[in-house]
Amino acid sequence: MSTEAIIVLLSLAGMLAALIADRMRPGMILFTVLVIFLCTGILTPREMLEGFSNKGMMTVALLFLVSEGVRQSGALTQLVKKLLPQRQTSVFRAQLRMLPGVALISAFLNNTPVVVIFAPIIKRWAAMVRLPATYFLIPLSYVTILGGLCTLIGTSTNLVVHSMIQEAGLPGFSMFELGKVGIFIALAGILYLFCFSRRLLPSARPDQALPDEGTPQQEGTQKAGTLHVVEAVIGARFPGINKSVKEFDFMRHYGAELKELRRGGTAYTRWEGLSFREGDTLVVLADDSFQRAWGESSVFIMLANGKDSEPASRKKRWLALLLLAVMIGGATVGELPSVQALLPAGVKLDMFFFAAVTTVIMAWTRIFPPRKYTKYISWDILVTIACAFGISKAMENSGVADCLAAYIIGLSRHYGPYVLLAVMFLITNLFTELITNNAAAALSFPIALSLSEQLGVNPMPFFVVICMAASASFSTPIGYQTNLIVQGIGNYKFTDFVRIGLPLNLITFFISLFAIPQIWPF
Image 1 (cartoon, rainbow, N blue to C red):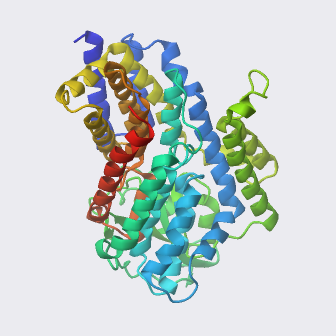
Image 2: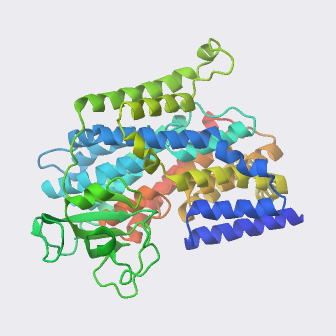
Image 3: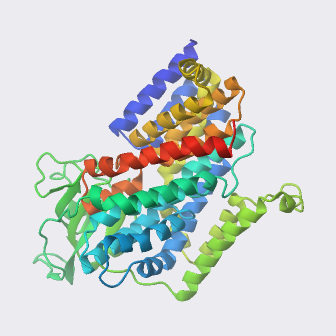
């Protein structure tokens, strides 16, 4: 094994250890690895920076803004209210109305804003109809993931793999190509949740006793008004991450009193030995200015104060939905060969084109505040994606991808590509549960490409299985941000995700192994 290959393997091992230990944000960890590859000559500066100008990465950035525009238009808030029964009902009937609709929405919008909007509304609705919210919040997160399997834009991972395929000189995915297998996984997953969520999820996970809404301001505070209970999920830019709760003066920073911290199904009201972590849910007493000041900040992923936000105008709601429909329809039609033949050279009506146009129109029509557009983009995800391309290139340049592919082939020499497809699913799915979905796809892609080349088979089945496995993060709350959000607001334990999520991982595994080779033959 060459010196370069050893450096790459050691760097990847260190990267995995740092990601699992959560030493810093994933984007910076991956960027550190890129710098090591640059210093050792494994990557040229051009190769290191190629991911930062990649069309797929830029498309993900634009889709963050499109999703934010739809969120701020109020269209999703109005939709979820129509999906939820407004009178006494059963868990099954409520899920029957809610889950398919949420899956359909998440096929075309970023998962996080869908969960951020729906989760607090569903929690309030569940209390109103006297059903346990715990029966709905994990299924909400799971169906957003399942819906994302069905389209090219359903999750950033699909766009990352699509761009890597194009970088390798092969045709990527069309808008609904992944839906050929994703729809079967989504339907099976929703049916599984219908049948087993009530048996596998806790019937209740009560909150600690908190003051009622409308508590008068405490003497000595400067702001007038009443205090309300607010649930706040800590985001990446919260300055107190990894700091002691006792030492970090939450009241001084945010003008709100911290009453409770929820993590892993446990509610803490004493702060000895406790530090803040990303994804923690804080229960605070705050006045209305807290929501206004921090509602659009990435300091908190979600704020819920038990009230509906002020609805946007009907005109903006319909305009946002119209733009979304035109973006999806335009990108789908623009991929048709008959349409491409009519276009001038250099013009391509793909998702990047329509996402860019939609973003500009949303900004100029003020569907989202154009002066604050940088707040709505998850920069760490973009840096992670950009670095993923460089890491993939380093694995190819050093020969690590070929070595790993040859080793896997050697283990499964007598069983054919079907077993190798299973191995690729398990490797990718393990990575996505432990680290992040985009990093998992980046590590798996060059191995899949080398596997197909050494076997002399069609690489597309391996690329599709990476998309399915990288998104199938059901067994732990740490693999997907939406799982972290509902863990806090539903006060779930880690074992709740293992109990209901592991069978869903297996469902995705077996359907993928059966269906993918039938649709994309080796």
